[in-house]
Image 1: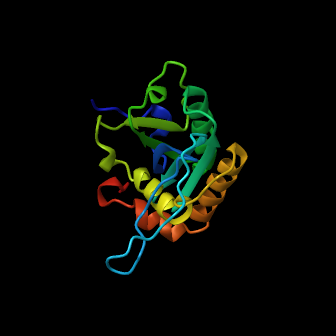
Image 2: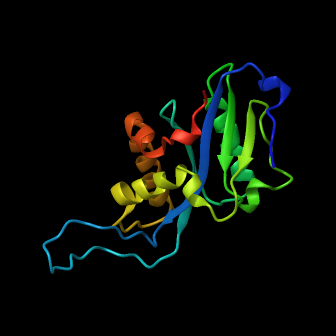
Length: 184
C-alpha cells in the first residue's frame, strides 16, 4: 500500500525516524564475552520478572535519538512517545516514523501529531527496522549480566543506558544508518 505525504508536508525537509520498543528487566540478557578457549565464564542471572519498556526512536541522518521508559507497552505509552518524537523533529521539517505492526501501533486511539506521517513495516520483518539493532547494542554494552533489585532500579538502569547511547551520536548513526533509508 502506497501512502502519500499530507499536503502540510509538501516542500518541507523530511526526517526518517525508526521507532521500536523493548522490554528490559530483571530476567536479564546473556551476551557473548571474551574468555579463554575451553572456559565457561560465569555471570549473574536473575529469574524474577519485574520489567519496564524502553520506547526508542532514532533518526540516523541527524544521529539523534529520543526515548521514554514506560511501565507498559500500550497505546497510551505510544501516544506519549509519538509526542516526544514530534517535539524532537527539526522545526519546519516533517517526520516519517517507521515502526512494526504491534497492536498499539494500529489502535484507533493512536494520536499521530500533525508533523508526523507513519509507515508500518511488513509483518515478521524486524531486519527492516534499524531500531532493533539499538536494543542489541544496549543489552550487549549496558544491560547484560545485571541483577536489578526493583522496578526503580530497572527504570534508572534503562535511562542510564539510553542516555549513554544518546551521548554518542556517531554510534547512533553507525548502528542505524541504511543506504536505502535516505532522503534525497
